[in-house]
Amino acid sequence: MIPFSPPRIDQKVIDEVTDTLTSGWITTGPKTKRFEKEISAYCGCQTTVAVNSWTMGMQVFLHWWGIQEGDEVILPAYTYCASANVIVHAGAKPVMVDINPEDFNISVEAIKKAITPKTKAIIAVDLAGFPCDYDEINALVKDPSIQSIFQPRNELQQQLGRILVISDAAHSFGATYQGKRSGSLTDITTFSFHAVKNLTTAEGGALCFNLPDGFDHEEIYRTFNTMILHGQNKDALAKTQKGNWRYDVVEPGFKCNMTDLQAAIGLVELERYQENLDRRKEIFQQYDEAFSAFEWAEIPLHTTATKQSCYHLYQLRIKGFTEAERDLMMQHIFDQDVSVNVHFLPLPTLTAYKKRGYHIADYPETWNKYQNEISLPVYYNLTNEQVQTVIGAVKNAFDQVILKIANEAPF
Image (cartoon, rainbow, N blue to C red; front, side):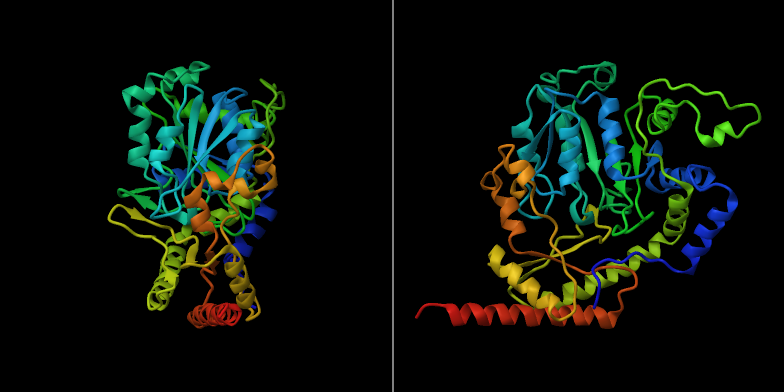
């Protein structure tokens, strides 16, 4: 069976984790701090806070920014549930909008139409690792007509003086836009280092801060290190100093710090990340070359003059297929011992959001993309022979579905 997206765990990773286990630091310690600094250097952001997951990092951030009941946060209907769940848990309303015709990312025009005086933030999701239109989104929130209706609730929001832009970069570590890497493209970037991501720490994530001049990023870093450790003003590393046991809890905080065990994996992953990107690009190119020969295959957009994907997901679309036909085709692929996936079930199709009044019919481009999308395996250890097996399985599956459709067609 060809798996969909296994992590790259080899002897180098095992040695680094073993070194951590024997070092005396298995929770947040020196490797986590080094990992944060190396992420900041790689991405070009002001500062980075490593956390135990994208979700908890975002939850803490929304709390800090003061997102609450009565507020609205705009996001695409086409994303994973975590993007919306954190808004709900903050007490605010997720305002879903549709995506672009040419890619899977949020539509700037749809954002503009959805903005109200209650809008406090926009979450732009870099689906599959392809960056959103950040120049346009950043310009939109600075438009005088948009700024004039912004209603800040607290000093942080007052200081910014406009809607906050958040990059949900769970998929896009290493992607570039206008020559800059993901992590430095807008106000806040949130990464995921889950096991299936390009760069993994088993579970984990990071908040990258790139707020405008006037924000003290060193103070923000200190504040978040307190917030992610129950509001305690000293972490375990600080308390190891002789006689430095006494601490305070300055506010009821959260518990979502990254551990050195996680950071150890991440440090290895980051050190060799370029070779990971290079291999993923090669796999994309092989898929592109194979499927461009077929009229029924819609190749995903992953490279433009200004954008470079990090090749996280290869989202093949089957032209003209319904959801049922796509599902049948996937089953035929699985039957050939090849694992594939769908990214994602749109938010308005999920029970949690249907019962909150969202309807997929309100997001036609989201449905158009979802109903015939199949994500193919892409990972460093996928061999060229396996890539050809995947291609063959997809072609065979398509032929079988077409044959079934033809046999069931009325005369």
